[in-house]
Image (cartoon, rainbow, N blue to C red):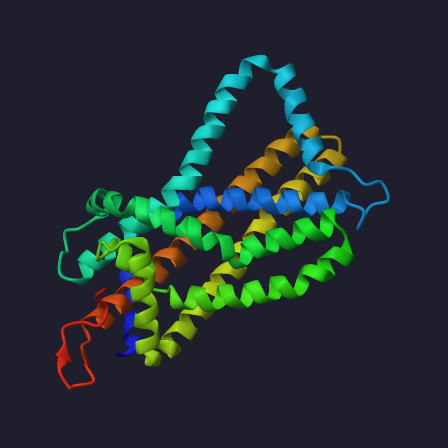
Length: 318
């Protein structure tokens, strides 16, 4: 298998699929990037208000909850609309990115196998059938993901102190290493679920087998892991930029006696940066889905021999 050709074909395919980028890359990325920006801002302010960086230790979560409660008391008429908007946003954040990934994989695989007319509608229609098992799988792997471990580490050091953090640090490092290995072994799980319609644990087993037997794909996997790393760096930079620009511009303009204008300019700047970050992440997501889908389809075609020398039909069956 020619890895360079697959990456080149994936990039050309991504550039020619603007609708795919918009519906299954850009739109879900708006929700994930917004939540990421909010969470990073929360962590920053929570650390700044903790005993690590402040003499007056405060509970930032309690302060935020109190601020929201006071705002709702002063604006009773806004309560119901804000609750509805918040619930809808959280539902889209929890559900749509997974559905978008299933739909994108459906479209990419169908286009790759000759179904040129398959578009976002086709992908969404067929992606619904694999949504629930894919959602179940994503909930499972998030328990040992890199960012989940970082969240736990930040909680421990901020609330339990450096001594407890040092005590748990070897355990966190071990969990990170195990998580990295499992993530590598589960590389193709999404595709077994979406393309082949396998169940979650059958897909995990088949993915581990595919990764182990195709050791030559280590080069490709390494390249793709670098790609994922670049995506994470871009996302982190953008996530930091959003609250930073909002605070910086708002504070600067407010300092020159234009508080209302400062809020407007800061909010507009943050919104534009959010859209830019979401678009970049969306493009990288679709490109990454394309590379993995093309690779999965090629590897699935390969045959293997049994110890008796017989040609096996496939070595990814249960």
